[in-house]
Image (cartoon, rainbow, N blue to C red; front, side):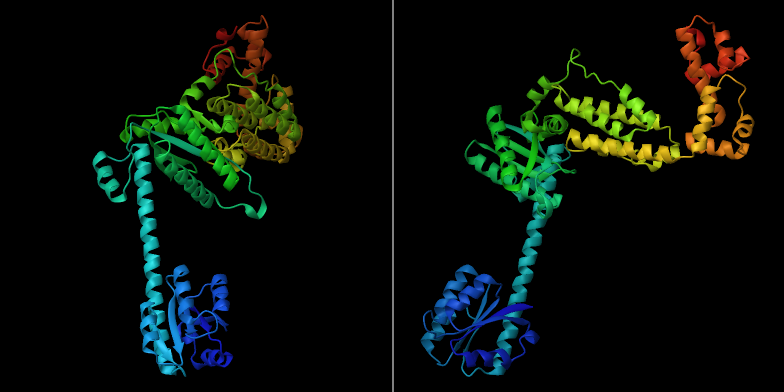
Length: 524
C-alpha cells in the first residue's frame, strides 16, 4: 500500500476526490488532505507520501511550484496535476516535471482510476528495484568483508584475492600493513538504551571506516573494518605505519569516538607491521593474542606488541595467592566467604602490575579445580552444574573483565555448594565415620549395621554421591594417610601399613603402587 496526499484550495473538490474512487482498491491509502501548498509541504515533511495529487492554481505557491520543491527532497514521489483549464503552456511545463497525468476538472473517474493504476505500478517497480539494489549492496559488502577477513587470517590465495579485489575495489597498498583488533570491554548503555551486539558492532565498524577514510588523506593510513568470527572487529591497516605513535594516536581516536557516540568502551590491540597484505596473518595472530590483555589492561585503551612484551611477568614477580582460606570456606560450605575470596583473588590480579592473560588462565583453572574437588560432588551432579557444561572454561575466560570472570566463578561455586549441601546427609555421616575409623576393619556390611541402611542401597548411594566405589574411596583415603605418616614419622612401610588398616604388607605395597604410581620407599 502506498500513501497519497490530495491538495486543493477548494474543500468541496477535496471531498469529491476523496470519494470518487476507492483509493485502497487502487493500492493507495489517503495520508491526508491539504488546502494549500504550505500545508502540503508540512504534511510531506511529517510523513511518508508516495503520490501527490494537486491543483495547479492555488493562492501562494502554485501546484507546479509545490512539485518543484518536493522533487528536490523526494525524487521518487509521483505527481498528478488537476486544473480547470486545458492550458497547453501549463501542460508543457508540467510534462517537464515528470508528472503522471494532467487531469481536467471535473475529474473523470475512469481517467483518475487508470492514472492511479499506472502510478501504483511504477511505484511498485521502483520499490522492487530499490530492494534489489539494497540486496546487491549487502551482498557486495558481505563478499568484501569475507575477502578481507580471509586476507587477515591468511586463508585466501594471491590469485583469488587479485580477482575479487578488482571487482570489489579493495585497496590495501602501502609501505606496510598491519592488523588491529577491537574488543568491547564495557557497555555504558542502560535500560531501554541497550541495543543488540550486532547493531553495536555495525555502529563501531561505521565509526572505524569513517575515521580510516579521513586518515587516508591526512596521516596516509587507510584500511577497512570487518567483523571477526567472534564478537571482535578486525581492522586491516595499510600505509604509513612506520611511525607507531601516529598509528596508536589514530586507534585512540577510534576508541574515543566509540565512547563519545556509542557509550561503548573498547580495547584495541595492534599487531606488528608486515611488509605487505599477503603477510597480514602474522599480524592478525599477534593482535588476537594481545586482545586478551583487555582483561587486565582495559583502561589503557590501546596496546601494541612492543608494550605487551614489557608487560610480561618476570620470574621475580610471581603472583602470591593463598588458597587456604578458600579451601576452608569450601569445606565449611560458607558460600559468602567463598564468593568474597574468589573476588579478592581477581581484584589482586587486577591490581598487580605485570598480570598477563596466561596468568589469569592459570589462576582460573586452579580455582575451578579446587572448587570441584572441595565440594566432592558425584560426576553426575558436577556435570549438571554450570562447571559441567561444555565450553564453561572458555566461556568464563571470554568474559570482558576480571570482575566478570570472578562473578562467573563465584556463581558456579555457589551452585556447586548448594548441590553439595543438598545431597544425602547420611552419606556425609558415613564419610565422617570412615575418615575417623579408616584403620579398622571396614566394609559395606559393617557400615550398614552401624547406620541401619541396606548394604546394597548404601553402596549405590555412596557411588552416586562421591563418584567412587566404597572400596576405592577407602583405599585412596588410607594411602593418603600412609603418605602423611611416611613423610612425618620414622615408621617403616610395614608399620605404616598396619597403622592405616592393612594387615598384609604385600597387599599394601600393591595398592600403594596402583594409586600413586610409586613405592612407599620413595616417600620415606
